[in-house]
Amino acid sequence: MPRLLIRDIHTLVTMVEGQAPLHGVDLLAEDGKVSAIGKGLEQQPGDEVLDGRWRVVYPGFVNTHHHLYQTLTRNIPKVQNAKLFDWLLGLYEVWRELDPEAVDVSTRVGVGELLLSGCTTTTDHLYLFPKGVSGELIDAEISAARAMGVRFHPTRGSMSRGRSAGGLPPDDVVQTPDVILKDCERLIAKYHDPKPFSMCRIALAPCSPFSVTTELLKETAAFARRHKVRLHTHLCETRDEEEYCLEKLCMRPLDYMESVGWLGDDVWYAHGIYFNNDEIRQLAKTGTGVAHCPCSNLRLGSGIARVPEMLAAGVPVGLAVDGSASNDSSGFLREMQTALMVHRVGTGVGAMPPQKVLQMATTGGARVLGHDEIGSLAPGKAADLAVFRLDRLDFAGAMHDPASAVLFCGSGQRADVTVVNGKVLVREGRLVGIDEEKLFHEANRVSERMLSAAESKLKTSYR
Image (cartoon, rainbow, N blue to C red):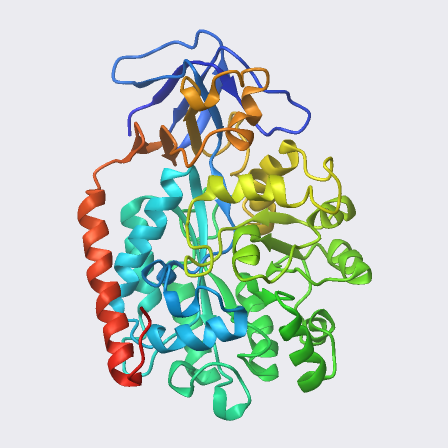
């Protein structure tokens, strides 16, 4: 791999604690790591050189929660105005049609969108395994993510409580605990790389309190800790979930998760909208993380998470786009802009300054995932970079604070360059080596196949 040299960077946001943005500096990357930052760095023959003038450079953004398969079920009229439980019930019927081809193309679409918005590390939560379909769906997404070049943290999701047992999902998309844990063991042995600068780490992720059994939650926590991998699930996303837990389990959601061993710095929850004061303190005390998904929470009308209070208490918080059927986008910059704005209502205009948003998008996400090498830029850190052009009309007059310009200004801008592990994956706002139009048509073909199959079986329209 050639060395990568970015010359004369207008604004370099390192996210190193206590360090202000740097101006007019060069950045050198070698062997997937940042090797030097400074003025006038020496160029060698064979170096790949990028122009940093009128660019703002950040550490690559970190996405802490996603459902990549949902890129095929976006903007469906039948569930455009549904809240979470009704939205799930409607879409389960389409997701029953998931197969390896759908997982492959949806992963390429979702990862492509993330890279185009400066995101270099992403998790994914794949928890739905239809009966009669290959069990190696996560293998398909790992293969696709590897081909795209993103730093990947797939989570082996699971559902074991079907509708007949009082759960929400249909019985034909759930699995038994034995099948689930056997596949967890297989995936960890085959793909999990715990070493520094790893490109693939596995986590275990039962879906939610209303779709898995108490026994599976306990067994998964013990299993994960034996294998030294992290734990992830949805929690406190809606009032409906809270009422379900109180009625069926006689506990609030976080109390229930604590009772089954799901607190600690190896655990992170998606959403966390309805944590109370005592629960926020408990999260902070135990180092339990939260993936904040503001666009999805607004799209489904679920609520606004108490993120300013969580950050003040010391809870690890990262940003996340959530699934593309509840967002309906994998654009990470849009998530950052929404996080900046939504917390200023009710909690005060100073509750969410741009620096906090950048922290959640970078070092916060790295902490949630336990990946110390990403999230900041300094010699020895991962060469994961998000580069945006500033010399555009939508940034005119905004150069008083270039580091914050992409949060306050612009509309749907793509990254000019995205670098992962020292390799340029986005150049001039286009994916390198990927025919985006061809991928668009491929995804639409598979999406239409899935919706048509669901409509045929149910004799109802999703249009």
